[in-house]
Length: 186
Length: 99
Length: 93
Image (cartoon, rainbow over all chains, first blue to last red; front, side):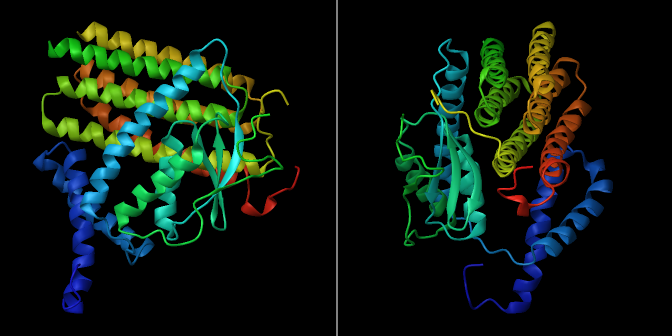
């Protein structure tokens, strides 16, 4: 809904319609394009649309196609690296681990963006999000020698680009937790 | 030829599943094990889905497998976040090297 | 080719069994919860392989349900079974 001149009635009607189209597309894939599947599909698309409107009546976010595509490419690349990294640590006889828990002060403000950020961080090499406290995200890091701060800032920027958000809020740096210091490799 | 590429991709996927389970067995605490499980198994499933996609009869089956894979990724990342958070709240101590 | 696919499914089954050793050892409930995720992801891969090998497309639907149930199980576990609420922080129970 890019324009402000759209009559509000149309916008009100568009919201359920748009969601119904998304659910119908999912059903079409799940039913493997079998036309008979619509006997069950239509009632369930209606139910799913109703449930979705009841649970999240207004959608706060807008997805920017270019940002989303860039994010997808980055995500695939990083999750491959993340999988290889942790697999190598698991099978090496020396078991190279030196974990620590850190906090990162997020610049992303909206909750939906923070959720995508946390989920992305968990699939990156060596980092696992493990909770939110106010404006910070707690994360577990497999190896204290990883340059976590730089990659977190990078991910945060890419998540911001998906939704067209700007990162003017304060933050974007790591904070120590549990008495340890950042980069403390004891 | 496509058959062999498909097999190679599925074998790569199986490797990541094996590495993931190895991590779950060898890693010292629940946090490190969560790393192994989420990252290695999601990548393993990705390779299996890619390998099977090359053999699939129709595009819709490929789309369906990709849908399942993306559900597993979202569910896995969110679940590991919740389990790690619950472990921290219950004071499960994180393992530290030489400490 | 069918045999090869079933072979890979069996290898994945073995990785699930290896993971079960962790469930058995624990030591804490979160370690056991890892099993639900392990079953979820590996189970989905096994079912997709079998759907192709045995030509039973319905197994893909089972895989879909597995993917959803694993997520539900994890959330239910965290919210109800193990940790009753978010207010116990710092409470050494």
